[in-house]
Length: 316
Image (cartoon, rainbow, N blue to C red; front, side, top):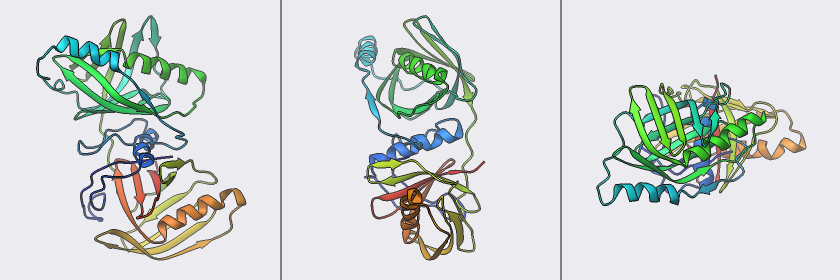
């Protein structure tokens, strides 16, 4: 499942990931999709500063707001009337939890379900073992406060994963201080210490000649999970493409214009069971006309002039 709210710039389709025209009013579903689609990369990679908190992965059912008024009050009281000094040097980037304690509880990382945090500008995103989260933050002279936090609500197994997530989020909202030293990030508060190591940047996938795997179906402000067999999309520099909907394969041709991509021909082969027909129709409806594409690291977002879209993750 997925969602976005972004400002985009033009790039050549054949040289860099393409995203057509400025879009400043996209649905909350697409906003959530961008955050969570990056769960498939093992981390939530922060988007450029001119983008807002973005999207989540499939099975996003809803998001909730974490109120952090108490934390903000502590920081504001400590800062008095002094001007914010900005984030400490080296904070921007992505970090992975290596150890932590909070209120007497030890946070033990799980290798298959990493806990991450990424900073860029005044935005924060991350993976809380199972779900993706995001929000904004302020720093001043070594102090930090998080606000406007959102999180997806998937269920993950084993139960230790959800326990780690709950303990981490409870610890994060109690954080009031930040220290960055070389490749080590320490967030701390009363009876709370979270230690992170720096993560290398995730390389950006190319639109063309990449196998994209369907991860979410966007309709208005809602995002549906994917069912059936693995659904894919591949676009090639000769103007052809092929893929599958989860039950049928398809192929066709496209052209590029100032508005994005336009399908000139598409043919689907095979049959779909009743429970896969809606997904099949959704995928083909998005791809059979004009659509825009945007790549954020390893996530591909396809949108139309209507209220439907698709979210893909790069294979491998």
